[in-house]
Image (cartoon, rainbow over all chains, first blue to last red; front, side):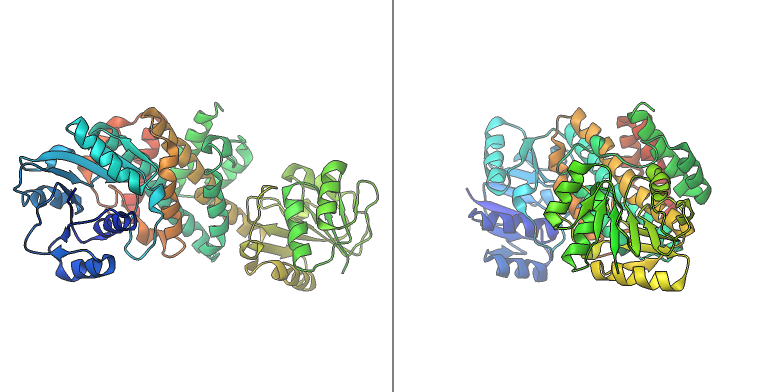
Amino acid sequence: MQIVIIGSGNVAFHLAKAFVLNNIPLAQIFGRNEKDLEKIALELQIPYSTEKLEDADLYIICVSDNSVESVSTIITKKDCLVAHTSGSLPKEILVGEYRKASFYPLQTFSKSKALDYKKIPFFIETDDEKDKQVLFELAGKVSENVMESSHEKRKYIHLTAIFACNFVNHLFSRAKEISDSQEIPFDYFLPIIDETVQKIHEIDPKLAQTGPAVRNDIRVLELHEKLLKDESLEIYKTMNHSIKEMYGL
Amino acid sequence: MQIVIIGSGNVAFHLAKAFVLNNIPLAQIFGRNEKDLEKIALELQIPYSTEKLEDADLYIICVSDNSVESVSTIITKKDCLVAHTSGSLPKEILVGEYRKASFYPLQTFSKSKALDYKKIPFFIETDDEKDKQVLFELAGKVSENVMESSHEKRKYIHLTAIFACNFVNHLFSRAKEISDSQEIPFDYFLPIIDETVQKIHEIDPKLAQTGPAVRNDIRVLELHEKLLKDESLEIYKTMNHSIKEMYGL
């Protein structure tokens, strides 16, 4: 099977690298940014082009959400499979007469950082059963976690990641505001944060909950509310209310 | 200096272990639970007792918050320093005519798990300068991060940890509810969660924020609100409101 990756950003680089490391040959990496392409091509020893798209059985589009549609129009071949790697777009965003798919790796990619590809989940959606098998086999060579996912399901995957990653990061920002206000280096909290996250690798977060809300320690909760204001106070109240609801307090 | 640790739980064990590993001799580990004490004493090769408290210069009380006061009364010696390890109690909770201190290691301790003690921050409060020096020197042998902290400051340390750990864990619980509802294994999100946390070891969380709120992507925000209800919806709105406020959106 001839595979071409389209794009020269972080997703394109890591996907190409994961393929190469798992002995999946790539026919080409194609994109606009010659400098980035050349760098990836050199590192991974694969052909690249900014001009002539190679003939292939599978094209994987690794570009930003708002470019997927326009980039998909450059593929004029009909008898081939085209997949995008976006978590939020339906496969129908792809414009062309080829077969369509979504091939979504759930991870935050940054170019410099080495990643354990085996652990990255891949979510796959296709038009037909045969294409599904092809993409499952491909993703299965890279990762241990491959599953089917409709566009509807991907919405919930995205939402889960917003709670578990985007909002978590914002809590770190608000926490840092508090420690900054007392001139306590936020780095001091990294070991306990690491431990908090390490814990949910082993047990259900619901069983790992600690803090004044789950103890229903009203004295401490009231004391804290006096130390906070504005958005942080709102977060404090909302989170504690939600914790109490979850544990029937 | 003769040091006695009082308690047989996780904090007592890890503190005793950190001392022993850093060649700080312990005169005794004292407590009520003989079985636990014996286990710790055997592992760390230190004397223990459930009955006769050894004469010492420094007693470190490692018991749960609501036992600190009563346990402190067993120390009848006057010319000594007594420290508790609670993050939330004032040192004045200690009942006796000895000198008082707070010696607070910021970490979640579980007995089985090995910890890098060098990274655990210690927060210290004493009545006088000499005791402060003694405890700084002691903590400094175990950890790279030792700082002074009034009871007032400890309140904010605790509050920071609530945002960065307790609330973060609750977000994991709510995230897991969402992924469970779609029969997506929550384990699939662990790599992206790990990466989210790894990132704040390198950059300010405020600079690492991603997601629809910081992009002010109203279409996605409205779509998500339709997928959520009750407490999760409240969290979604509160967090996004706070993100928008932080970035002036």
